[in-house]
Amino acid sequence: MAEKIRVIHYINQFYAGMGGEDTASVGISVKEEPVGPGLLLRGLLGDDYEIAATIICGDNYIAENTEKVCNEFLEIMKKYNGQLFIAGPGFNAGRYGLGCGAAAAAVTEKLKLPAVTGLYSENPGTDLYKDRAYILQTENNAAKMRKAMKEIAAFAKRLAEGEFIGDGKKEGFHGSGPAIDIDYTMPASARGLNMLLNKFYHRNFRTEVMMPNHEDIPLPVLEKPLSEIRLAFVTDGGLVPKGNPDNMVPTNSKYFKNYSFGDVERLDAADYEVSHQGYNNAFVLQDPNRLIPVDAAVALKKEGKIGDVLTSYYTTAGVMTPMDVGKKFGEGIAQGLLDNQVDAAILTST
Image (cartoon, rainbow, N blue to C red; front, top):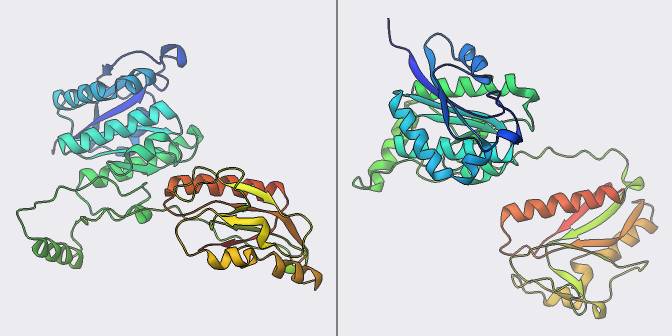
């Protein structure tokens, strides 16, 4: 009979039944059996796997001593001859998520052993470690523990058994997953041909290029005719009132603003300027309606082709603004549009 694959599972003090915040500073302890969600994990992994040890660590302790704790985790993996590491899942628990991501990355990078965890997209551990470890996408909270653990167990078995792992969008993990080791003694042309042949013959391979894994945004559906909608304008072209009263920066924006243009039929060039260094804004300075087409929208409203126009617009400068910052802007602007009962928006760029 073949030996079982030895799994090391990491959980926090809460899932170990030790308590909540009152025990969040406890150090590392090890139980040579499945604990808490590990009982579910054991059943999902099946008879060919055994949870050789459960590592328990307080959330505060791992967050405050991340490198030290991860090094201790590595020693525990060695002590118990661990062949597969599973952390969490941590869902949207911040410190626990940081611990799950850090531990999975440490095992992947330093021991070269398969490791996986599961976190919600907005968990800080996701952003920090999604390009260093396999972090499967989970729901916001532990109400979906069974579903998350089922997906983690299935993915972990594929890792342990050396199955082909595709890109994150297809496989359901955040980011690009762990970076691969590149043998630079082999010419790039040879490495490329090897990858092509492996792909052709359906063998396991990984690209050397870090592939972004953007979240899918569902296509919105307009639920009323155009003649009844309220329309708004959003721009990353940096249009601001004359004098730039809020000191909007021309690059690497830190915030967005909402400016009222009142009950006018068109924007007056004398009232506006541009804070954006990424394009030739001479035409916008000549006529700001080329960026925020208030004149066209008002005309459509008079003709009865649209119902109403929001008398303010949202603006920022998109040049060099990081994607994660842009995402926060988008969420804030979207909430503002909802609060103003806007049905549709026109986003103008440069």
